[in-house]
Image (cartoon, rainbow, N blue to C red):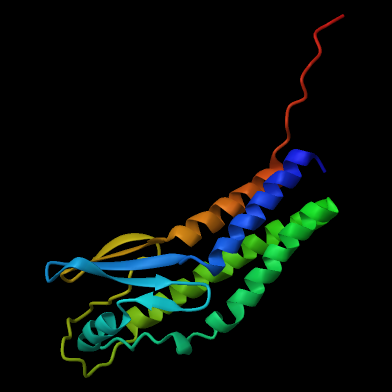
Amino acid sequence: MKSLTRVLILIGATLMLSAYFLPLWHILLDAPQYPEGLELKIWLSGLSGNINQINGLNHYIGMKFIVADDFKEFKILPYVFGLLTLIGFAAAVAKSRKLLWAWFIGLCLFAIVGFSDFYKWEYDYGHNLNPHAAIKIEGMTYQPPLFGYKQLLNFTAGSLPDTGGILVGLGGVLAAAALFYKPRLSQNKSK
């Protein structure tokens, strides 16, 4: 394993550590009555932001309250992600292509399962509404977008990666670069 590959792996694994200190994702709700917006930040092990205000508004349309303790994912994610990060560091230290492949495949599976679970969570909260809610609009669902922006009544809902998510994504790109980048060999033109 070349030195550049090991450096890419070490930088990528180090960027992964940001997930423990920075929010991974945020959902922003913007409306005329909330010019500063309402924000929900998703961390590796919990939630922060304007949760009480969002729950208060969601109650009127029949959505369940958002409570971090309801998500078993927050209890296991720090350990799973820690294991993946350790595999990345081990790949660099051991100069192991097999561990690099294991790390890359693990990160891909983590992303697929994570985004699928996030979509399922959003779908459940946006579709399984209390039929006795104060505000009911026939056929209306309130699922925020998985990625990007969407109009929900008078709210614009945005769902985007936060600082930690961007750094983790960059770490994943570096893992892919370490695995797939093949430097060109300079051709010696001397005779």
